[in-house]
Image 1 (cartoon, rainbow over the protein chains, first blue to last red):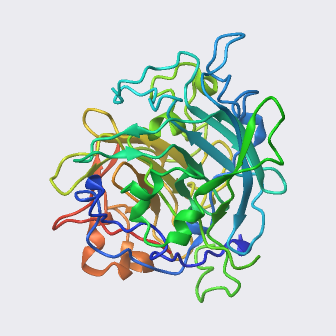
Image 2: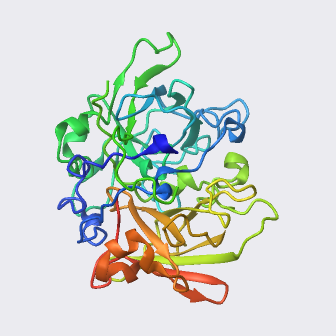
Length: 241
Length: 183
């Protein structure tokens, strides 16, 4: 527990709570600044998940909802990378959950009534646990772009949602991965609620020919970084431990 | 290395259920048909069983019916690793009323901290997950430094007693805006 001191978050690097062009933020962004305090045991600890909970195909969205002998429709891709903290240390043994639209841009969700059809062999969710070197990998299909109700002609870039756990619950993070070269990235109010172009660029996965399997499946690389652990313990940081 | 910055957050969006509570989302059979975090009490444990209910309200006073809520708390023994209890739970807000329910155990005080539950909220329109705490109306919270740091707004973190536990209303905006925290 003593190793899990949490570095303060750079809130200017994250998307701003109220994004003028992302309508849903208007009624959901708190007005007050977040109350900041030195971490306690509650923030420095967090749940642990073991490989035993994983099913054989949890990390393969191409087949994990498909009928026997079938597979999801769409360009086949591997998404892989490394989970690190801000100090560059790999973060092993952590749960990563992903979800996404199908190749036509349709989610398997009762609230999604987009015209594009469902794929009966595709659920759109998967999960894996990082290895001892922080590496993770899953197989899926390239999600489609889709329109969304935001008051105008808004289309989401193709993206995959990521939910990530760290050692401490204060490291908990949800983000989205985009694809290199997608012109919708620059047009999307959700992406552009991130003020720093460098922060956006870090959410863009790159085509990775080194992991691309010839005549089979292309690979994209997406590295994820969690909040780091402070080198100098905060005064009183150990209170409650 | 050593100079990396945290990956920027993005909203969980309206379809977070697909990835995090797929059975609730109707994806039958996914992950063995059991949503992670649905059951916090996994054995015949000693402790005060409570139902913690809550609801998150937007600036118009409308309940969020598309949110996902996770909690993290100490066990009755004051640790975060008691046998038969996960300390962690995950629930969707109900798609009609917005109410969420955690069947859990009342946490112990830890060190100088009053008993509390850490709450993490993600949803469409929330760009960076919101963290708050639940404190209890029947405990002395004034000795807790996080509680006292919140000053006159601290009471927004105090649940009310119910027949079988506690209830917390979480307001994202307005005169009763809840205190959100970030260490």
